[in-house]
Length: 191
Image 1 (cartoon, rainbow, N blue to C red):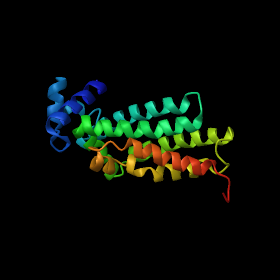
Image 2: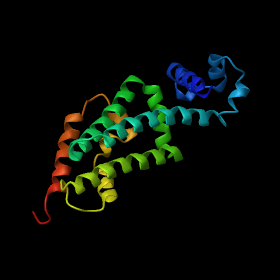
Image 3: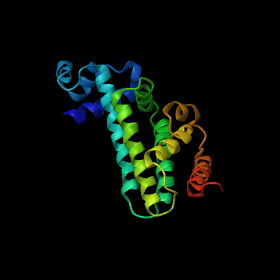
C-alpha cells in the first residue's frame, strides 16, 4: 500500500507540481478514501518527505555500490562524485517537479535530509580511508578529509546549485577539480 501511495504521489507531483499536490488526489489514484492515507502519513508534508526520501534512498544505494566495489579507491572516489553529480543533474532535468520536492527538503533542512548527507559523507570517508590504507593518500583524519572533499565540490551536488546550473553539463569541470583535490591528498607535506 505504501509504495502504491508513493507512486501515486509522484504522479500527482509530476502533473500538478509539489505545491499543488493534495492528499485527496493521491487517494483517488490509489482508489481509497483519503482518510486511509493518514494511517501511513501524518500530513501532506510527511507524504512529500516520503517521496523525497525514497528517491534519496535509491541514490544512496547507487553510491554505496561504488563505495563497496573493488578497485583503486582513488578512481572509485572520483567515480562516486561524478555519479552523484550525474544523478542529481539527471533528476533535475528529467523530473523537475520531483526534484523540487527534494530541494525543498534541503532548503528546510528536514531531518532525513541531514541523515542522508551524513550517510553519503561516510561513504566518502570510507573511500578516503581505503585510499590511505593503500598508501594512495597521506594519513589524515578520513572524516575531515571527506568533509573537505564534499565541501569543495558543493557546486556540483548542492540542490540549489544543481537547480541553477542544470542546463550546462559541468562534469568535465568536476573531474578536473577532483584531479586537483586528490593530487593534493597524494602530495607530501612541504612539496
